[in-house]
Image (tube, rainbow, N blue to C red; front, side):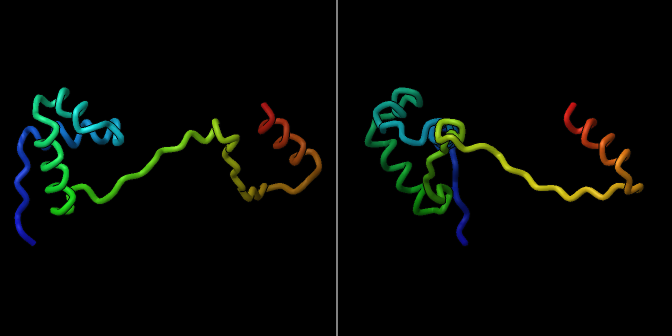
Length: 93
């Protein structure tokens, strides 16, 4: 594998892409102070070199009505109605 050279513009570009991956080359260029064509060439090189492995969309679970469901198995030391009730009350609080 060949050594990849990353300069300060590449680092700034990677930072900007991580913050907003769908930003236009013109917008990225304004932020980094390079032309849109320079941004395009740099992104292409970073993709070809494997620095940028892909693109994703981060979804907002709450906006989709999705919550978190977790399952846990609990084993109490003493198996009695009183200890079960005490445990349930503690968890409810």
